[in-house]
Image (cartoon, rainbow, N blue to C red; front, side, top):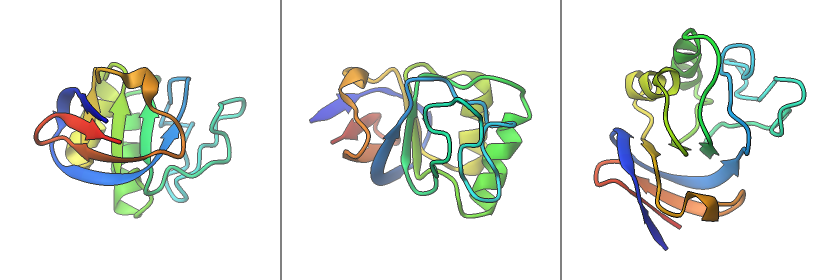
Length: 129
């Protein structure tokens, strides 16, 4: 199935979906060295986002989260791609400066599930499951 969306950060990537129903704060919510979610009580607590297609509604928290995304990339533990229900500036800028393909506003976003393999084409604006 091919789902059209809006391009936020160009590029292509594929991987296994890791889905969160809750927003993610990268500052204090994700460890930049390991790529694990460390926010207590978060649905993804203890899970690694490294190499995953990270799907979540939107980011939250401090603008420093942008630089945490950049550190994740530099440390080799960033997601391979990001899909948001609706992007906000913190995650969008983090994806752009880190060259992580990112889409939002996917038609059929709710059909994405953890464990699915997806190809993200953020050059042409679609994700293919």
